[in-house]
Amino acid sequence: MRILVTGATGFIGTRLCELLVGERHSVIGLSRSGKGSVPGVDYRAADFTDASAVEDCLASVDCIVHLAGRAHVLNKQGDAADLYRAVNCDATLQLARMAMAAGVRRFVFISSIGVNGNESGDERFTETSVPRPVAPYARSKLEAEQGLHALVQSGDMELVVIRPPLVYGAQAPGNFSTLLNVVDKGIPSPFGAVRNARSIVSVDNLARLISLASQHPDAAGHLFLASDGTDVSTPQILSALAQGMQQRQWSIPVPPGLLAWLLKRVGKQDMSTQLCGSLIIDGSKAREMLGYQPDPDTLRSLREVGRQYRANSRKTV
Image 1 (cartoon, helix red, strand yellow):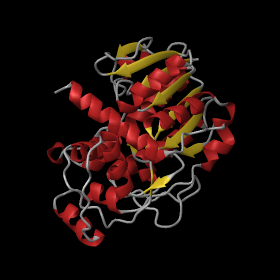
Image 2 (cartoon, one colour):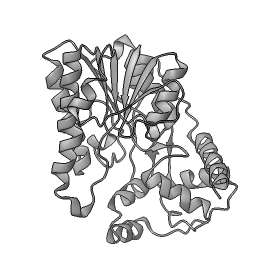
Image 3 (tube, rainbow, N blue to C red):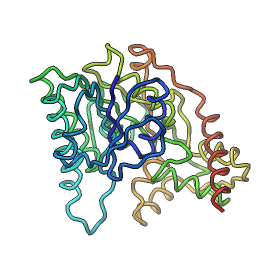
């Protein structure tokens, strides 16, 4: 297959491109720089929001995996909802319309579990759960999903949507990168009293699911929630990373309510929800329908991530 990947040089995109090349697909990697690290990928310098730049890349493409998007808005940049919508929804629909016109057979959209909500409570999120996005980012992803579903009704292009939770790996950005740095430095953790449960997904497992979604005939028209298949608590995540780094990990049992309040006070609302709340997923649909077989040993994977992070950090010292 000839597969075009947007966001090809990012954390998830790089791992996905490695996997697709290994599966002997012809891969076009879109990024703003056009420079990537995966041998065998045809990298193109193109911002997916630029229609004229993207148009030249669509010839003979069988499938688009759309990873690129806007994940953050700085306070001084303007209205967050409008900025997220412009990139994550409007530009995504523009790309999909161009793909349909070019004869692309399948469009795989990487959304976010935030579309379901920030916390699941004791009941697992499923593909049939009512969407309850809280943040502007998640709302823009839901709007994109809805727009894509409406769009493909008028043509022959197939749509597959994947909603991943926290994606982890040694090169992960965002809050997980902060966790890695904190554990590596041996900074005491205030999460010792947190008793939550979270479904997360390794970048390797997510790449496998995306690969299946791009090829499997039964994936067309479906939504899939991604996870490793094993739930872990925040203290377990920190402990596993520390073990992989061969670092002692100190946990202070700060009451979860107080901890959440403190994080919110310093503007870390998202981190408070991710680290103190519970978000659990039923990922059985992908396993049953597509034969998706993730590595379910999340703690072992986290230990390996810790080992890789420590090894990489020592190389740069």
